[in-house]
Amino acid sequence: MIHYQATMRHNEKTFQALAHMQYDLFCKKNLAVRTIISVAAMGAGILNFSQWWGALLIVYGAYLTSSKYAQANHTANKIVKGIKDAGLEFPVSRYLFRENAMEVITMPENTSLGDPMMYDSVAKLGEDADYFYLFRDQFGGYMIPKDEMGKEVDEFRFFVEQKCGKTFQTQIAPVFKLLRKI
Image: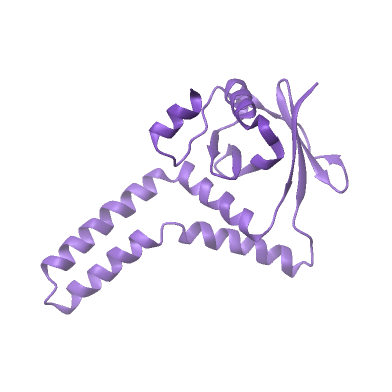
């Protein structure tokens, strides 16, 4: 029995969004280290602003702060370039959410992409304004467009969270998460 289904049509922006969510969910240590180094560099630069290297430390600290997704963007751009250079179309997949697993169907071939992904094998769940993200591991995941769920967005979220035993991680304020649950 299929509980939900959705079609995902990738483009350059979706690869970037997927890479950003992947970074947010799996690279928290990296972000923490970048933040500490950034604050330290800017602090040392401010204290030594009269020296040439003080200004350089401020610039370096600002770069670390503002380039959070630099590696993620590089990876996404490399994938997009590979697709374009090969003369291929961006991938389109159909997701079938069954009782115990999600099946991925490649389009337009309409063939299954191997074994279904069991919900208990999902590593992490993410969510932004437009998509749900299901990551099988730190190296790859799937995007489900919210607009494909129509008015059943909340029901879908609840279904996936219950099946996976995990909650979707978002960047929204906790008060909005509480309001959504109410």
